[in-house]
Length: 327
Image (cartoon, rainbow, N blue to C red; front, top):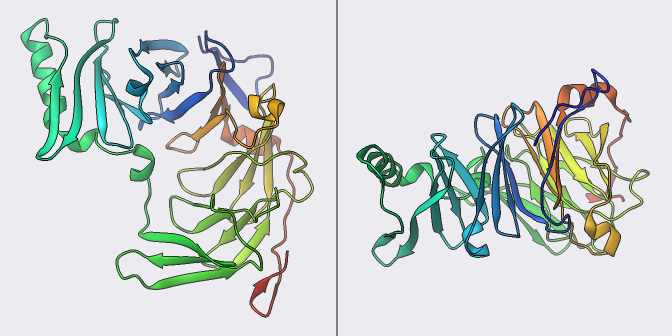
């Protein structure tokens, strides 16, 4: 169960959930629902959980096969959970009765979506509810992380430079020569205004403000551990960077470190020395909360209090020489 942490009235940590499974079962995904009132957690053991932030567990779904877990999940009308995959297949569970019923699957076929019914509705009301959900595919198709983007830009790497183009016109917006080969795991913010990147052979992370053509090194002195996941706040004003057992929060407009959030224990990858983390992290749609999870725990922080607590560290943009970034 989620519970409110009350040991200190102004602690950034405001909630925690312990997941009753092996702590090394890494999460496949972690999402807030669009209204920000629930968190959806998909675990590689094949379980989907929806946590109500009023501190009650809403539902637990144990899938029949790991493929049904999907790459993401949505909660529709408080009644239906749909999970989807990158191959555009979908599974639907009705949770209104308290016992999840997988009532339908859908997959792409040559003539559009192919639906397969798996359960019979107990009454006419349930039939109407199922038909209504399935009729409006726009509300459940596609990865919700992609739909949150508000820009029309594409970024790519060519030799030692990162380029940003407008998708509609294929015109170049900006380019950044970093003087070395960038890693392919660069990330553009939802607004298309910032890019987080690394260089080959380096664990340091960098932030590029495309509009002002400024670049900040984010983890020059603090970062003595491996570089794992990153996540942008919805408005793009903050980026969270995962380390071995905590997260650093950075203001993208100034490059300043604004807070460090402790997860309370090391992620599995940090223990085993892997380059891939078992953690997942996300911001609420309104930017007020930040959540993170590994295989056995979900933690929730209040962003306003986290920024107030710090620690705070100013940052200065890096310099250029002959158009090449000086690292």
